[in-house]
Length: 258
Image (cartoon, rainbow, N blue to C red; front, side):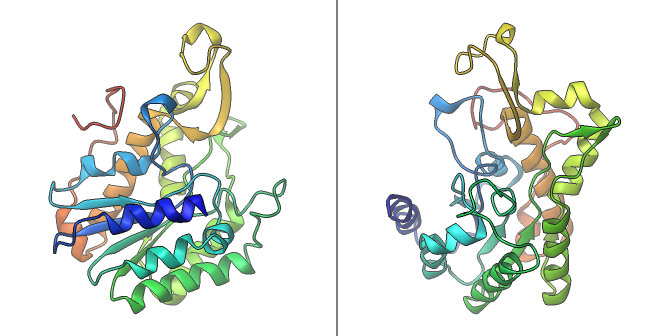
């Protein structure tokens, strides 16, 4: 209920203008975080750095959500209720749908996950807005010197739904895996919440080993990869996209833009 009310507030307080909007429906890897959570950041926090200033980003990503719980908590219905014609909706789920420890989140990639994605697409289109499916950002997982695929069946479903329904697709999973490989195992570790005590990160005095959640550099890279794909999709929003560099990401201590 609290999350649903927060979502409603985020939407209803947005100014009613004709300016282009990007709305993000996702999980913790895209979500907003306060300064107290730094260096953890979601890519949705810095997507603005790859967009014209006129574009409004409404980041409705919520940590721990799957397609199932985003629907069950009423978050999706509230998002749809506030959609305007011309909006672009980035839909990225999969990390929590694949969770088999917290089964209240879990969906079968060939069952409810498929059904939920198709519902999301239909609902957005019914509002004369544009859905864009986004594969979940890659985890920092390696095997035999190569990034390891962590989302196989879920990515396959996203790709199938995108093809079946002719939905624009941003393959963030594949693009991030390619970026990890290009950087190498040790260097790419610095894109995630992977710290040792000697790194002296105030929030993690004892260190942390988290292969899923990204830090500021990971968020900036993720946002740049999403923007690069958006710019090439020839959507109405594409002309407003100016992708930040994927070659290197500044560390500014928060979500400000260079």
